[in-house]
Image (cartoon, rainbow, N blue to C red; front, side, top):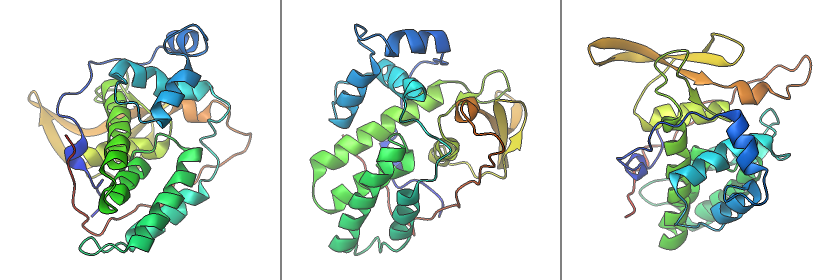
Length: 245
């Protein structure tokens, strides 16, 4: 079942629509006197600060594109290891050593992609199964903040109102959370791709057959002649969602 574990973790009230404006993102996240200075936001994020707002997450997520650590085209070997471990979890009787291995691999994977919803999700699940409710809730908050930011960046229904993501996988994770099954993405323009839905749905009397995502940031520093190979799909063997208040 290709789904995030914790569909119930996504808060029911999404942030107000806020498409990223690059001049604004740069001005506020690179200014050391700004409350949205990226280094400060990242420290709060890594510490699991529960007071972070949706505005904080907006500048944190999109401001990461201007950090030296943002290298979206580099292979995340720790993610491959993590997904392999996750596929072997028995949801009825998860083994402690496997859960600890998930946390170790997840920690390494987050160094390459600190905002991966699937990794944050697995970290929350593993900590919860180990009985560390505080850490589990902290990772769930991080995941929710990232997903709300992506879902609030555009409705994704037209090429002019795409959802903005830092990684290809983030788009698919967001679609998983919404319960969508999808096909292979198609390039629409230099920055936008269209991901068709296997089962269209109707909004205000109009049938929607897919969603648009802006992947432009991924290609900002693309090496000449580079060909990106998308990660394989992943499964969670029917692991159940868990909810945190």
